Image (cartoon, rainbow, N blue to C red; front, top):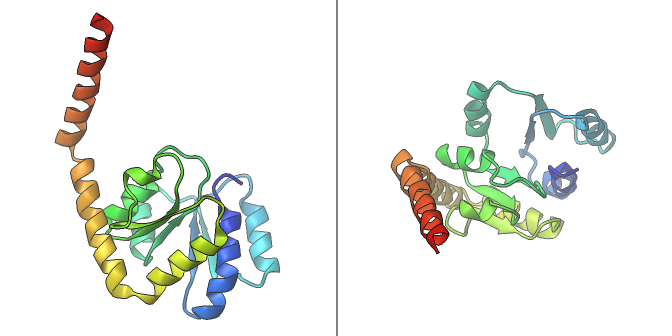
Length: 172
């Protein structure tokens, strides 16, 4: 339930009617995967929503690159690694505005939306499905942003600054 599949499925019901060629790809597995597969089948969306089950890490970029956008509707997940992974593949992200998502997703790299807001989710996805130029622009900006933020030098400098600050605070 926390991964947000219900919200994506609900949005897909509407979007699949407007965008006949759209297909959703759910990557991964879990104790609710069979439930979601049955739900998708009952809704008549089996041709629109596909499940890969668990993929080895080296196949994740292949799955991301086969997509136009990444939709991440988790309700709790720190900074989900799939967001920067998608951006490294130059794919824009639509994400619920929870936890660490805003560290990488913003108006320049994708769309942050209110958690559980299916209308916003549907609108954001439709905007990106309809506008290839916007997808490309956001994807390129996301790639550059993530490359800079998560470069080894940047990460080391950031961690070092945190330690220095903690040491200074403990001197008091």
